[in-house]
Amino acid sequence: MKKTSKTVVFFGSGPVAAKSLSLLLEHTDVEAVITKPRPSHHKEEPPVLEIAKKHNLPHHTPKNKKELTALFTSVQFSSPAGLVIDYGIIIEKAVIDYFPMGIVNSHFSLLPQWRGPDPITFAILSGQPTTGISLMCIDEELDEGPLIGQAPLEIPKNINGPQLTEKLIQLSDAALGALLKDYVQGRIEPIPQEVATIAPTTIPSYSRMIKKSDGIIDWQKPAEQIEREVRAFIEWPKSSTSIANKDVVITKTEVVNQSGVPGKTSIQNKHELIIYCGKKALRILQLKPAGKKEMSAEAFLAGHKNQLD
Image (cartoon, rainbow, N blue to C red):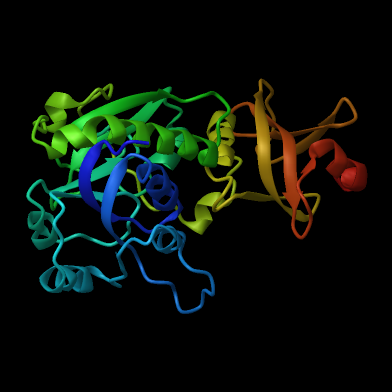
């Protein structure tokens, strides 16, 4: 495929960065890759580093923002812009200013909605019907830089975190292929978020890092909220509870219009497992008992029904 943009330096470390870099290389010249080093306790190469080596790209692995800033005093880059996706190290102003066109970030929400580290999870948790991606020029403030462009995405009703992430990676790459060249060549003037956004509101909202404790199901919450948590947390921290004195992870549910004591289980139609919530109830469709494979609720009941009677 013909390259459609001038060279960029790519900053990224996580799995989203790895997939994004693979797609980016199909239409954009990448001068170098900057990623986190391999943790000392990991044997495998970080995926972004693997891709850089596979494509014979120069690569650098500063451990923190101090080392990153020092890198730009010792290594010369010719790219007019940087591109950061899922990096995880603070980029100081000196590094941003190194590039004539600054550093572009592909952020997976419609800014100023869900600024912060985990916009995909919070898009699902909120129950909002639409999310998207924002191409932004980064500055020293948290996700407050001016916008180059945005693209919306309707959130399918039953989508989970990994599935939504994959859709947004593809959408991000399409936007980069369409807009990055024009921005680097000075044909797009970034516009402040409050003017340019296509989000339903210009009032900022903020995501946060999810903790392991977020995955412990609180049955006092409404069923709709717990159902969204199950989908949002399916990869991590997972939605855990105890059923029939067994630790389980709930992996698929549906809301039912029933009421009862929150946390109490009910077996209906011989094979349906219902758990009452603060409002309405959840029908458990799939779950994973500790140390076992994921199974249907019907299969779980076949072995544990007596403990629930």
